[in-house]
Image 1: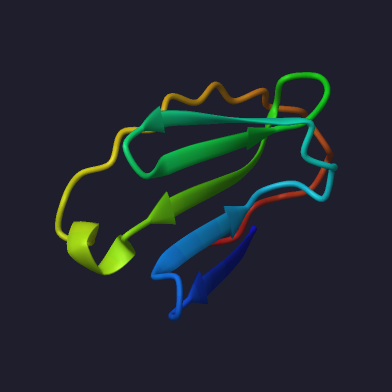
Image 2: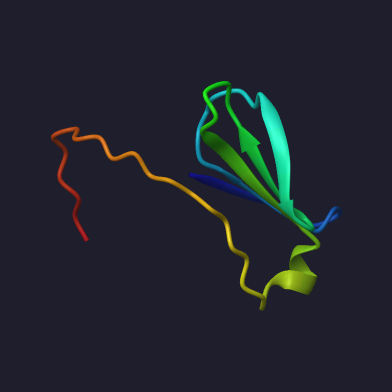
Length: 74
């Protein structure tokens, strides 16, 4: 995951995939999901971030877990 904040636009952008954006959907005012061609989330953009940083933002997601043989350490 990559996170970028644009101070001039007051927007934060979470990139969760390197796939190209096929379409975008504003799921609530100032919260935009970007999808790839298969309908998977590629990125999440939150506008007016400073005004919203103490608010809950709900983002509907579905996770598809794939076994890779790698172990998680924490």
